[in-house]
Image 1 (cartoon, one colour):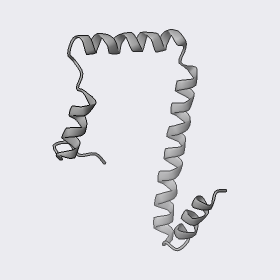
Image 2 (cartoon, one colour; image 1 turned 135 degrees about the horizontal axis):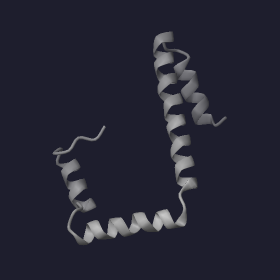
Image 3 (cartoon, helix red, strand yellow; image 1 turned 45 degrees about the vertical axis):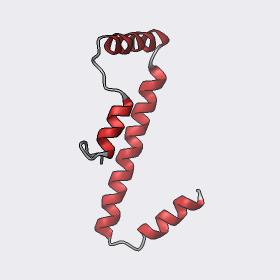
Image 4 (cartoon, helix red, strand yellow; image 1 turned 180 degrees about the vertical axis):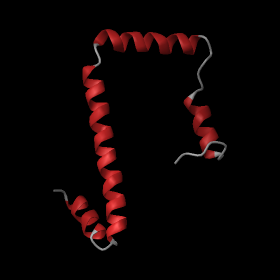
Length: 83
């Protein structure tokens, strides 16, 4: 176990049981979500990646996308909230 994780767990131990359970639920759900995404990425074929890349290129060419610069501008100007 890493030192950082040990520190986090030490702090968790000081919380009431209900808060420990809430945080444990969040952590376990996040770990399961990561496992699912990892499985999906690993099972994606080269042909599927190519098809997705082609779709993205078509959307960019059709003007159906927003540039990252515009997205970050909207976030930084608080027009879009990120949580």
